[in-house]
Image 1 (cartoon, helix red, strand yellow):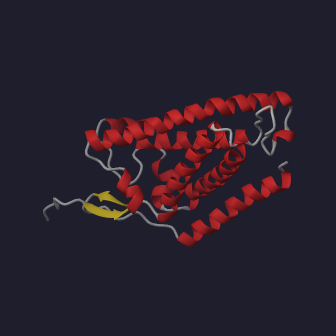
Image 2 (tube, helix red, strand yellow):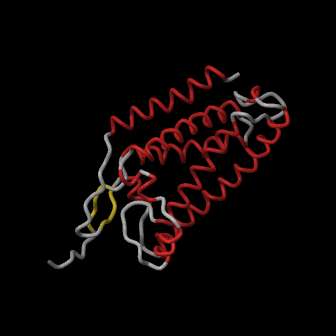
Image 3 (cartoon, helix red, strand yellow):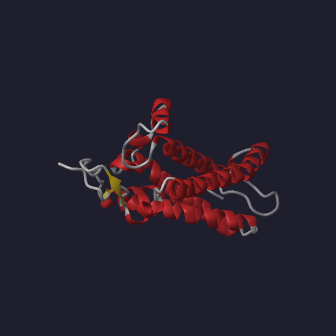
Length: 219
């Protein structure tokens, strides 16, 4: 049977993954801007929301749809080399993109967590700053400020990579994250999708743990 010349579109990114992606991007952007403007009340609220989103993503990376699971895209150096040599085929995150995903999640998790213990030394303290010493608070505050620029740099690299793939390789990475559908080989089966009800339950548990925990132990 001849291979079709028209790209075959299949469901790649489920709705929970897409909503997480864009919510995280918006949440980080508003948190960064509000922090830069000294609107620390908004900044801390957004930081808490980002932490809840990250908790959801960690769970979804274990129990979610095939392309969202860490086991499906986190690979070793050999997979990255194969991709760079043009010998990788698959659906979802490529091995090099997986490095960016893991780095972004780790840095954002460190950013949100450190903010819980940070202080501006004037009037605003993170909700858990009372639990650590003044020296630890100063260290975590300095890390929080420095890491925000590291995250911003990684975001810049992410956007540059998207532009390179679109302009240099003719690969659109944005539309699939909006529509959920991406190109696949003619005979590649669509990746399995997890239940949206599971995503809602996981999000509820994540929000309850983060917001409930801070309501209980935060000051």
